[in-house]
Length: 226
Image (cartoon, rainbow, N blue to C red):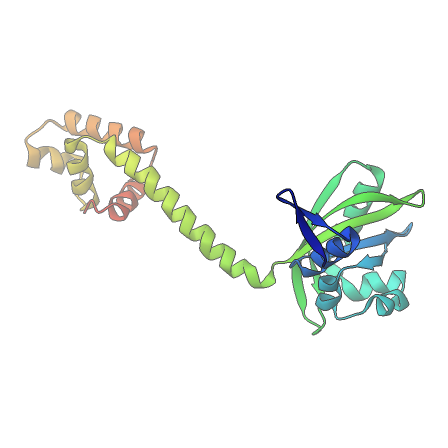
Protein backbone atom coordinates (compact mmCIF):
# COMPACT_ATOMS: atom_id res chain seq x y z
CA UNK A 1 0.00 0.00 0.00
CA UNK A 2 1.34 3.40 -1.01
CA UNK A 3 0.34 6.43 0.99
CA UNK A 4 1.64 9.81 2.14
CA UNK A 5 0.83 12.47 4.72
CA UNK A 6 -0.55 15.75 3.45
CA UNK A 7 -1.44 18.51 5.94
CA UNK A 8 -1.68 15.95 8.75
CA UNK A 9 -4.04 13.73 6.75
CA UNK A 10 -3.27 10.27 5.38
CA UNK A 11 -3.68 10.22 1.61
CA UNK A 12 -4.02 6.81 -0.04
CA UNK A 13 -2.31 6.81 -3.43
CA UNK A 14 -4.17 3.77 -4.70
CA UNK A 15 -7.49 3.49 -2.87
CA UNK A 16 -8.57 0.29 -4.64
CA UNK A 17 -5.36 -1.44 -3.57
CA UNK A 18 -5.81 -0.11 -0.04
CA UNK A 19 -9.41 -1.35 0.21
CA UNK A 20 -8.43 -4.76 -1.18
CA UNK A 21 -5.69 -5.07 1.47
CA UNK A 22 -8.10 -4.10 4.27
CA UNK A 23 -10.84 -6.47 3.08
CA UNK A 24 -8.42 -9.39 2.90
CA UNK A 25 -6.79 -8.69 6.26
CA UNK A 26 -9.83 -8.49 8.56
CA UNK A 27 -10.98 -11.64 10.38
CA UNK A 28 -14.37 -11.84 8.67
CA UNK A 29 -15.63 -13.65 5.60
CA UNK A 30 -16.91 -11.11 3.07
CA UNK A 31 -18.54 -12.40 -0.08
CA UNK A 32 -21.16 -11.60 -2.69
CA UNK A 33 -23.72 -14.27 -3.59
CA UNK A 34 -25.89 -14.70 -6.64
CA UNK A 35 -29.25 -16.22 -5.65
CA UNK A 36 -31.29 -18.28 -8.12
CA UNK A 37 -35.07 -18.67 -8.22
CA UNK A 38 -34.93 -21.71 -5.90
CA UNK A 39 -32.99 -19.88 -3.19
CA UNK A 40 -29.70 -21.62 -3.98
CA UNK A 41 -26.58 -19.48 -3.77
CA UNK A 42 -23.32 -19.13 -5.64
CA UNK A 43 -20.41 -16.80 -4.76
CA UNK A 44 -19.44 -14.33 -7.47
CA UNK A 45 -16.82 -12.65 -5.29
CA UNK A 46 -15.07 -13.54 -2.02
CA UNK A 47 -12.29 -12.20 0.16
CA UNK A 48 -9.28 -14.26 1.24
CA UNK A 49 -10.79 -15.13 4.63
CA UNK A 50 -13.89 -16.74 3.06
CA UNK A 51 -11.73 -18.81 0.72
CA UNK A 52 -9.53 -19.87 3.65
CA UNK A 53 -12.52 -20.89 5.77
CA UNK A 54 -14.23 -23.09 3.17
CA UNK A 55 -10.98 -24.34 1.64
CA UNK A 56 -11.91 -23.54 -1.96
CA UNK A 57 -10.55 -20.98 -4.36
CA UNK A 58 -13.00 -18.76 -6.22
CA UNK A 59 -12.67 -20.84 -9.40
CA UNK A 60 -13.33 -24.07 -7.48
CA UNK A 61 -16.48 -22.60 -5.94
CA UNK A 62 -17.69 -21.61 -9.39
CA UNK A 63 -17.19 -25.15 -10.67
CA UNK A 64 -19.38 -26.57 -7.90
CA UNK A 65 -22.33 -24.54 -9.21
CA UNK A 66 -25.65 -23.44 -7.73
CA UNK A 67 -27.54 -26.51 -6.45
CA UNK A 68 -24.55 -28.46 -5.20
CA UNK A 69 -22.99 -25.34 -3.72
CA UNK A 70 -25.90 -24.98 -1.34
CA UNK A 71 -26.04 -28.69 -0.53
CA UNK A 72 -22.30 -29.12 0.01
CA UNK A 73 -21.51 -25.94 1.92
CA UNK A 74 -24.45 -25.51 4.33
CA UNK A 75 -25.67 -27.90 7.01
CA UNK A 76 -28.89 -29.71 5.90
CA UNK A 77 -30.75 -28.60 9.04
CA UNK A 78 -29.97 -24.95 8.29
CA UNK A 79 -30.99 -24.79 4.62
CA UNK A 80 -34.44 -23.37 5.38
CA UNK A 81 -32.89 -20.62 7.52
CA UNK A 82 -30.59 -19.62 4.67
CA UNK A 83 -33.23 -19.78 1.93
CA UNK A 84 -35.77 -17.85 4.00
CA UNK A 85 -33.13 -15.23 4.73
CA UNK A 86 -32.33 -14.86 1.04
CA UNK A 87 -36.04 -14.54 0.26
CA UNK A 88 -36.53 -11.82 2.89
CA UNK A 89 -33.65 -9.73 1.52
CA UNK A 90 -34.57 -10.12 -2.15
CA UNK A 91 -38.23 -9.21 -1.51
CA UNK A 92 -37.28 -6.22 0.66
CA UNK A 93 -34.31 -4.43 -0.86
CA UNK A 94 -33.85 -2.22 2.21
CA UNK A 95 -33.68 -5.14 4.64
CA UNK A 96 -30.54 -6.26 6.42
CA UNK A 97 -30.88 -9.86 7.60
CA UNK A 98 -28.80 -11.64 10.25
CA UNK A 99 -28.63 -15.40 10.75
CA UNK A 100 -26.64 -18.04 12.60
CA UNK A 101 -26.00 -21.28 10.71
CA UNK A 102 -23.40 -23.97 10.06
CA UNK A 103 -20.90 -24.04 7.20
CA UNK A 104 -18.56 -26.87 6.26
CA UNK A 105 -14.97 -25.67 6.59
CA UNK A 106 -11.91 -26.84 4.67
CA UNK A 107 -11.37 -29.70 7.17
CA UNK A 108 -14.86 -31.07 6.58
CA UNK A 109 -16.12 -29.93 10.00
CA UNK A 110 -19.31 -27.96 10.61
CA UNK A 111 -18.61 -24.54 12.11
CA UNK A 112 -21.12 -21.95 13.31
CA UNK A 113 -21.05 -18.67 11.39
CA UNK A 114 -22.92 -15.46 12.21
CA UNK A 115 -23.76 -13.65 8.97
CA UNK A 116 -25.38 -10.33 8.13
CA UNK A 117 -26.51 -9.78 4.56
CA UNK A 118 -28.20 -7.15 2.42
CA UNK A 119 -29.21 -6.79 -1.20
CA UNK A 120 -27.01 -5.06 -3.76
CA UNK A 121 -27.70 -4.36 -7.43
CA UNK A 122 -25.19 -5.51 -10.03
CA UNK A 123 -25.92 -4.87 -13.73
CA UNK A 124 -29.55 -4.04 -12.88
CA UNK A 125 -29.99 -7.48 -11.26
CA UNK A 126 -31.04 -7.29 -7.61
CA UNK A 127 -30.62 -11.03 -6.89
CA UNK A 128 -27.20 -10.44 -5.36
CA UNK A 129 -26.41 -10.35 -1.66
CA UNK A 130 -23.46 -8.75 0.12
CA UNK A 131 -22.63 -10.97 3.12
CA UNK A 132 -20.30 -10.48 6.07
CA UNK A 133 -19.77 -13.54 8.25
CA UNK A 134 -17.81 -14.26 11.42
CA UNK A 135 -17.04 -17.80 12.54
CA UNK A 136 -18.13 -18.17 16.17
CA UNK A 137 -17.67 -21.90 16.88
CA UNK A 138 -14.43 -21.42 18.77
CA UNK A 139 -15.72 -18.26 20.41
CA UNK A 140 -18.96 -19.63 21.88
CA UNK A 141 -17.28 -21.02 24.99
CA UNK A 142 -15.38 -17.75 25.51
CA UNK A 143 -18.57 -15.73 25.07
CA UNK A 144 -20.36 -17.97 27.58
CA UNK A 145 -17.59 -17.43 30.15
CA UNK A 146 -17.79 -13.66 29.65
CA UNK A 147 -21.59 -13.73 29.80
CA UNK A 148 -21.53 -15.72 33.06
CA UNK A 149 -18.98 -13.32 34.54
CA UNK A 150 -20.99 -10.23 33.61
CA UNK A 151 -24.22 -11.85 34.79
CA UNK A 152 -22.64 -12.52 38.19
CA UNK A 153 -21.30 -8.98 38.38
CA UNK A 154 -24.71 -7.52 37.56
CA UNK A 155 -26.39 -9.81 40.09
CA UNK A 156 -23.81 -8.80 42.69
CA UNK A 157 -24.48 -5.09 42.10
CA UNK A 158 -28.24 -5.70 42.29
CA UNK A 159 -27.89 -7.64 45.55
CA UNK A 160 -25.66 -4.91 46.97
CA UNK A 161 -28.41 -2.37 46.36
CA UNK A 162 -31.00 -4.70 47.88
CA UNK A 163 -28.86 -5.21 51.00
CA UNK A 164 -28.57 -1.46 51.50
CA UNK A 165 -32.35 -1.24 51.45
CA UNK A 166 -32.72 -3.75 54.30
CA UNK A 167 -32.78 -2.67 57.94
CA UNK A 168 -30.51 -4.26 60.55
CA UNK A 169 -33.50 -6.11 62.03
CA UNK A 170 -34.54 -7.45 58.62
CA UNK A 171 -31.02 -8.78 57.96
CA UNK A 172 -31.04 -10.52 61.35
CA UNK A 173 -34.40 -12.13 60.60
CA UNK A 174 -33.14 -13.30 57.18
CA UNK A 175 -30.25 -15.05 58.96
CA UNK A 176 -32.64 -16.75 61.37
CA UNK A 177 -35.04 -17.81 58.59
CA UNK A 178 -32.14 -19.14 56.52
CA UNK A 179 -30.96 -21.16 59.55
CA UNK A 180 -34.26 -23.05 59.52
CA UNK A 181 -36.22 -21.29 62.28
CA UNK A 182 -39.92 -20.71 61.76
CA UNK A 183 -41.63 -17.32 62.13
CA UNK A 184 -43.07 -18.36 65.49
CA UNK A 185 -39.69 -19.61 66.77
CA UNK A 186 -38.05 -16.32 65.76
CA UNK A 187 -40.80 -14.39 67.58
CA UNK A 188 -40.18 -16.41 70.75
CA UNK A 189 -36.39 -16.00 70.49
CA UNK A 190 -36.56 -12.23 70.00
CA UNK A 191 -39.45 -11.82 72.44
CA UNK A 192 -41.66 -10.21 69.82
CA UNK A 193 -45.18 -11.01 68.71
CA UNK A 194 -45.80 -13.40 65.85
CA UNK A 195 -47.45 -10.59 63.84
CA UNK A 196 -44.41 -8.31 64.26
CA UNK A 197 -42.00 -10.93 62.88
CA UNK A 198 -44.47 -11.88 60.15
CA UNK A 199 -44.69 -8.22 59.08
CA UNK A 200 -40.89 -8.07 58.91
CA UNK A 201 -40.94 -11.21 56.80
CA UNK A 202 -43.50 -9.73 54.38
CA UNK A 203 -41.44 -6.55 54.05
CA UNK A 204 -38.30 -8.60 53.36
CA UNK A 205 -40.02 -10.58 50.60
CA UNK A 206 -41.37 -7.35 49.08
CA UNK A 207 -38.02 -5.54 49.15
CA UNK A 208 -36.18 -8.50 47.63
CA UNK A 209 -39.00 -9.22 45.12
CA UNK A 210 -39.08 -12.92 46.07
CA UNK A 211 -41.99 -15.23 46.82
CA UNK A 212 -40.50 -18.39 48.31
CA UNK A 213 -38.45 -19.21 51.39
CA UNK A 214 -36.03 -21.16 49.17
CA UNK A 215 -35.31 -17.96 47.25
CA UNK A 216 -34.63 -16.13 50.51
CA UNK A 217 -32.22 -18.86 51.62
CA UNK A 218 -30.38 -18.61 48.27
CA UNK A 219 -30.13 -14.81 48.65
CA UNK A 220 -28.79 -15.22 52.19
CA UNK A 221 -26.11 -17.71 51.10
CA UNK A 222 -25.05 -15.61 48.11
CA UNK A 223 -24.64 -12.52 50.27
CA UNK A 224 -23.05 -13.95 53.41
CA UNK A 225 -26.17 -13.76 55.56
CA UNK A 226 -25.71 -17.09 57.29
